[in-house]
Image (cartoon, rainbow, N blue to C red; front, side, top):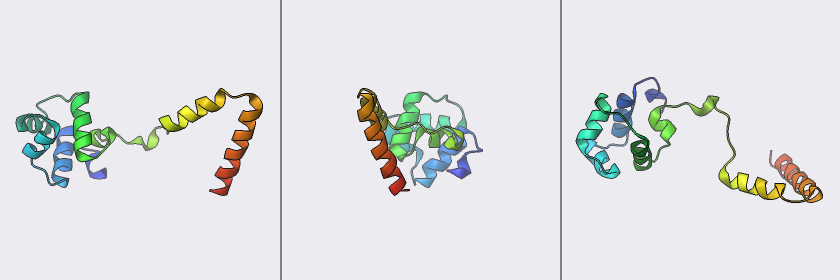
Length: 113
C-alpha cells in the first residue's frame, strides 16, 4: 500500500484495481455500480461516499484505511470488540474475582511474551 499513500484517491484506486488485475468494468460489477462511475472516481470527477468505500474495500479484501491511504501507525490501537466485551464482563464481577482474573492474565501475558 505504500505506493498509493501520496497520490490522490483516484490514482490510488486505479493502482489498487490494476494490482488486483481488475478492469474498471470488473470492479464495477463487484461493487454494484457502473464502470463509468469507477472511471469518474479514478479521474476525480465523482465524490466518494462511505457505502462505496465499504464496497470497494470488501471487493478488494482491503481495509477502508488502505483504500483511502490512511496511515494508522500514528493512531492509538483500540481493543477489539471481542476483548472489550470480556473486559465489561470482568468489570461486573466483585473486586476479589477481578483481581484473580487480572493476575491470571498477567501471568499468561508474561509467559507468552
